[in-house]
Structure formats: structure tokens, C-alpha cells
Length: 128
Image (tube, rainbow, N blue to C red):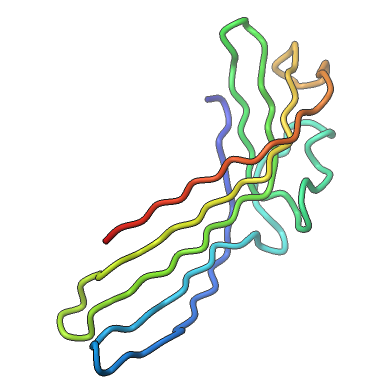
């Protein structure tokens, strides 16, 4: 990995207080900031992939000596249920989609690149 960065802001919301079960539910959203702080090495990486500014970048060398240049929008939605009795996490879910636009490039400066491929990475984790 030559470059691997993301830039996020946090939105924290208390969504439920269940006094009978003694559990509080929080939602923590990791969202692109208005001005993300990621390196956009090439001009082709500056146009937004999604509906906000790009906040995720990854550049890596491939096994054939070329370069994979990926840019996109990365978010996390985290729901956490916490015990009011002792503060332990009762359960949590993380949904992490990344909207990606990737190009294969012949040079490290990312100036000789092929057509872009659009895809999504989606991570979903649950803890009980």
C-alpha cells in the first residue's frame, strides 16, 4: 500500500433510553467532512464518486508492476447498545459501505491510467 487514507466527521445521536431493560442505544455516524483531508494524487481522483466530496483514497502497487488508484466515499453507521447498569456493550452493529472508482495505471504518478471501474466495498459486523 503506497497511500491509504480516509477522512471522517462524527455525528453521535442518543436514539433510545430503555429504563425497563436498563439499556441505552447510541448511533455514531462516520461521514465525509465538508473538506476531506486525503491526498488526491492525480487529477482524475478529484471528481466526487458519490454525493459528497471523496474522503477515501487507496493507491497500491499491483503484482504486475502497475498501480491501482482508487478514490471514493466511505461512511460508517454504528449502532451501540450499552448497559446502564455497568456500562458494558450489550450489542453493536457496524455498516461500512465504500463507493469506489478505481483505475489501473502504468506509472507511479498516476498519469497513464485506463478506464475507471466502479464498485462497492461493504463491510457489516455484528457483536452480541
